[in-house]
Image (cartoon, rainbow, N blue to C red; front, side, top):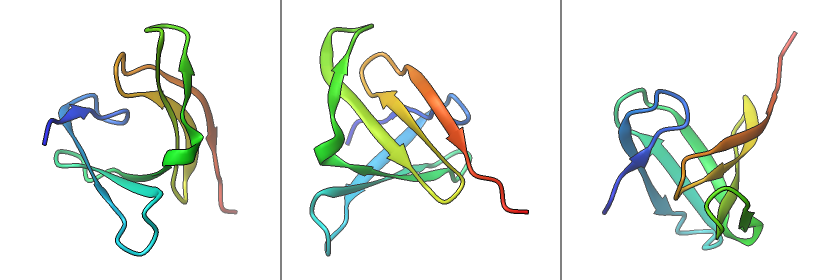
Length: 83
């Protein structure tokens, strides 16, 4: 499996696997910084920077944002803060 650039640590160690129970959910993990996030495959949109349909919505318990797996663009980050 090819690795991607991690949106958190920027290392080429971001890999994915499909959730067995929910086939539309992809789980992304970074082998360097242990960052984990989830992608719903139904949330792919067109990336204006690279002109591909590879921009996906990634989400975990701390944040959510749009990420393109081709040009590694991260945009519209929303952080969750627990008080």
